[in-house]
Image (cartoon, rainbow, N blue to C red; front, side, top):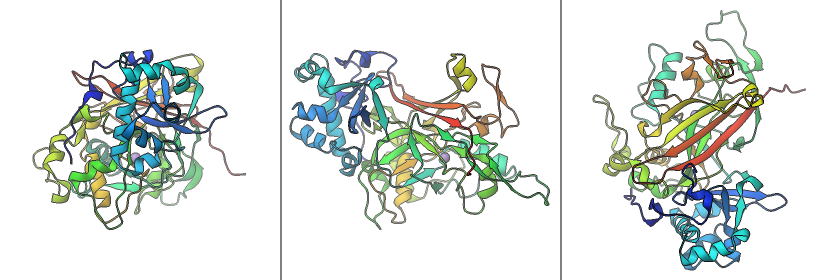
Length: 448
Ligand code: MN
């Protein structure tokens, strides 16, 4: 793993000529500069960089001749309608393009002044744009790397044996579906499936009906940049070179369908009906100031096997990101209420780092392809209330929660919108965020 150092793009004193980027509360100050795909009405999808409440149109900057040398070459990889070509080349061109965007958007520099003069040609207000999926996602794998989530959930399904003996050795994952990954703002229908209550008497048959136990899983996702070749594992100290950046991910889960179907091969239809991601991909460069040591395993836990252990990962394999989960019910929406924060949790306490996840994924020779999406697993952490799923919060419905509207929830209801937010804060650095990942549950619809 290359030691990640901060550079001038992270300088907390940098200001942009885009006024909203200097707002204390924005997720997208000039120190962030995440990539995404957007479209204006009647226009083609294109690559953009989020800055305050605006989008920098990369193709328009290219046409206007604002990029030079390596920046221009990198921008040429970002002319399509997905980030895949940019991802394909690994982190180098994306780093170069981010640095070029930083230079163009700075206040009081020659480049910045030139760009600001043609602001109307190169900036699109987010309010006038539709955001799209950032990449053509080939494969989607979802890990289970929070030991706090695994323990709490394991206890509900197997009270005597919450954590299976493999957990502290193998980063556990399942293969999901990329076909039903949608961008934030896309509503979806409650899934219908087979369910059979765990304590049902032997004569009771399973039923086929809308899920009674719809849940969110608040996660981060990371996109594969350059891929590896089949048969060539990625060593842990090089894993970082294969990760393009991160987004928010809601791995929607139907707990009743899951409980009945998961043995012995794991999740299937309980999760493949919908997954939602945030539109802006925060690069590993932008996250550099927020790297921390990997999670310190408690005394008595085994060391990872050698292929999953390195000094560099111990030193800076962790990421200090806060996840925030909020709910907005139909009734709250009608009354004009604000979303209600259900939980906050901390990614820095993950048992396995994203680098260990990537290395483990390729360790058998499995090929990862640019644009593949890898989920981290539900972000739950050590604090009593730091839970990334409603399953944990309500103890599988046994302790329902009350919303500010007076409504009671054991699981997610029709009309509820779940909103994920993520942000990084550190003394001496500018706060950066991930924007939002939101989606609303519509009533189930039976096949006619
Ligand atoms: Mn998940």
